Length: 112
Length: 113
Image 1 (cartoon, one colour):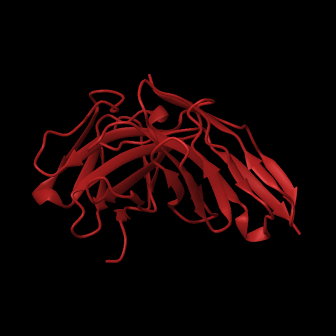
Image 2 (cartoon, chains in turn red, yellow; image 1 turned 60 degrees about the horizontal axis):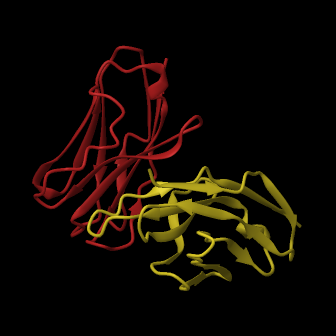
Image 3 (cartoon, rainbow over the protein chains, first blue to last red; image 1 turned 90 degrees about the vertical axis):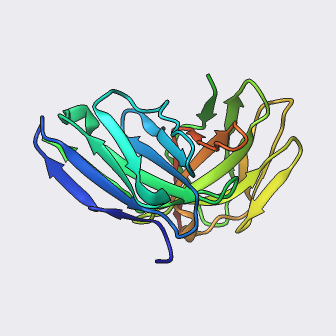
């Protein structure tokens, strides 16, 4: 594909359920980032993957959040026991090393 | 920690008006600075960037100059168009090799014909 893709585009879930959000980066991009865009907190960094290095998880807001990147490509962000404050748009971006970050369209998560 | 303070919006201007959106930063070192734009219904995209003091980033008629002495990176455009209506985010990154972005709160710009 030409750009970063994310799925689903929208997700509505009930409080306490687990959700998985998927990101397909641009082919060949070694760096992958997750961000969250919410009304209360603005745009905030969550986690960063670069090649085979240990990910930078410093932005994850709680231990209910986790992410993995398989084979240096697709990434999945998992939120366990979702809470209403998790409602936000989750953005994925990818880049070459030290390059421009290209953002996906986001997944809008609504926790009821 | 590192932070970005951005002019509060929303901002409404008439077409062909001059635009300034203020952005200042706090950082322990020498960050790279960015302006990102989010057009209605579209994803975030890089508008321009500057990586060292006194650099000027420019794109689509927009400009911003990295001012270390005032820790600022104000966005300007001489004559705005209706198509410039969007949300603009100022951002910085610090670490060489881990360019996670720290964003400002965003400024919604509306241009009226």
